[in-house]
Length: 604
Image (cartoon, rainbow, N blue to C red):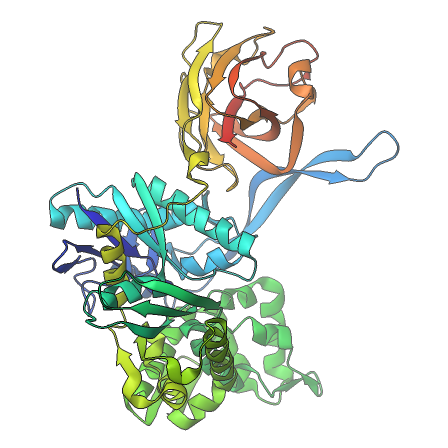
């Protein structure tokens, strides 16, 4: 069975297989300029049909660009509000939650999904009527890549080495949390053996198999989302040895934003409104990325922008701003920006021309001016390069070779920086788009990936499940939009990211009114945190559940023909062994509970 390597990137993703002699890149996107590279884009329409890569970009441009944004308030699931109370305890009440949604949208485009792993608070997003957790979104891309590999290799590809940056974010704990989300996504995509390798170390492995002599190498892996720096000994008969590594939260997307910031003069920067006031800076901040631009098309800011068209000393900029935020053209503008940046790789000057209704951008951007725009990023990279060399306990001149990879490593300012620090003769350019995935494939073939220490959490700890009612109870994996009862077609529409991927007991809903002291019997193979997902509006819990702790920030929603109902989550640590839980209406219960509870377990 082939072991494959995957580079899931902020901008592009790729798959490869190494047979011990030759590297086999997998074709992922025939319409792309490089068919072995899949742009990391997801387009999902209202029927939840999904397109990826070039097809996703083309569909979005065809169906969404130029379409007016139409906001409408929609009700979503209720949430429980908890506020401090008197001596009797906190006050709890349920609050209906609403969101403003663009009802004119034909579909939704997701770009740079990997970047969301940087934010430990980000769990997922609503796409029309459904909520998608981050692991489910990543799984959409990984599942497609797995299917392409299997179709071209002619065998199941259940074993994978996944690339990851040196760090996703500043906190080591948050970085491991991000990796765990990626691990769950791989499980959801159908992989069974999952290992990781840091992206620059993978590139070192690819160089290692062709290097005859031992060298001290600096791997400079600069992609769309992050810069990874690694000092390693490579080449010769010994395996690669990592000496030092650093992750820098700077990427190619940051350079695109610098260009966009330089264009803000077309959309209000420097404009005075209402008799001399500066145009609101918070409005300009929302123009730094195309994803946040539509926020200014909401009724309140849009009304102000239209008022500014009458009071501003630059009404043309206000009309251009209205066009930008209401016509859904931010993605198209950023594509022009990114192309201009790429042209500056080979040329000393590139034109950026963008005309759409009231927008008329005509800029002649010199490479020198671009380098002034990104001076902060260049200085950060220079500082981190010196630091990783210091971490390795060596001097700059002791680096034998610099391996440059990743799309952003092509930017001349960073090429010149490397040459100034290490010398022109030491720089080696690896394929910017496929060298990391090639290294992942080598690591996979040689079984050198790192098995995650938390993998046991997603193994099934239930050795025995039985209901005293005699009804059918089974094991399942917690995921949104999956059936949650053996005798009903009800589905969980919202599952918190903290619970997704865990094994659970799929009960019979007809036992919802059981008053038994012992309804569900199960055996745990190892100590675990057991979660009980119990309908939220009970006035008092059954006594068997009162010893559990309420997980205040977790809520599960279950959809039935009669509506969507919220469930609270309670937890307690259990040792390995056999246990029994009572019925939902067991002694101590009071209130309204007409759906059975669900039990999940996270092994310790």
